[in-house]
Length: 409
Ligand code: 5CA
Ligand code: ZN
Image (tube, rainbow, N blue to C red; front, side, top):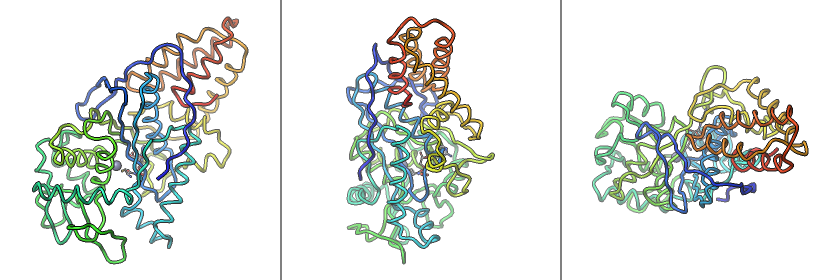
């Protein structure tokens, strides 16, 4: 699949710094030390509805990771999937009487437009689950050969007990795992499973649903977790730097994915850091396609909202916080954008060198975007009240805000 166009990332004076980021697996901050090529996998959308502010907040967080690495002059190898076949997508297509392929294509196209408008840098590899199927089948076959998978009425399950490190991503107790499994696509109550948590690797073809040739597995379609793992292993290999997504993916998705990969390769861990963004809510509940309490990026754009203001609204919240979208959040972001634009449109200003370092320091400290915004606010305020001294400063600020925060002034 093609991704979307990249906005240019200006080079900045001085030296970028290494990223310290919160790792769900260890529960603390880790300083990442990627080689010359940093490797990141971020879970993509299930394209059955338009991109909402929650999605945008999560992709904004991982865009900051990419921007911090680019600032250190590293290359970034970024892989993202599209879950372009899954139960919710098929159910929505059925409900609306549309073809599921057409629905997925339409919503993926809209996602690309939204990401482009928000200046979220694209992944190098943007891979659909459907196009990954030929690579998924041999992995499921291999898990079977290893004794880590079993059949139940034609479906194939992964045995969580085959991974000694199972549980090490989310660190939850059995009861919590069981609850979340039921909530998030698992089937803990299905009779005949070895362990209620065991996730499906391959679902035998169902009447009226799409299916693919699965060689020795028979016709069917892949389970959710093995899709992302197949794509990640194919394009990044084991031991990559960051596995990313929203906090609702820590369990079961990232836990199961890591287990699949670890059993397949015999290596541990799959990723050096498991990074999770907080959930954005609307009217007191998590924004979710299934609940329908959504604010769409595309709708805001149609209403004439500047995408830079949307981006500033996202950046105003720490990525790990759960927060609520309100009109006021957007109004504040618009006002801030106005202040910043006025400040950089003047011919000179206070020196910006210290500001660039402050933004760097904030972002490398667990992506503290609110602290970075506060630093720019202070510069803009001084710019207004003091006599300008540095004719280059507005240009440096414009470039730094673009390169590190993805905001075009
Ligand atoms: N396709 C799978 C991942 S393989 C999936 O979770 N798709 S999704 O469309 O439901 O979500 C896409 C990304 O947005 C995920 O990382 C998810 O954690 C994140 N996300 C979903 N809802 C919210 C929300 N309300 N706030 C923040 N992030 C969210
Ligand atoms: Zn995923």
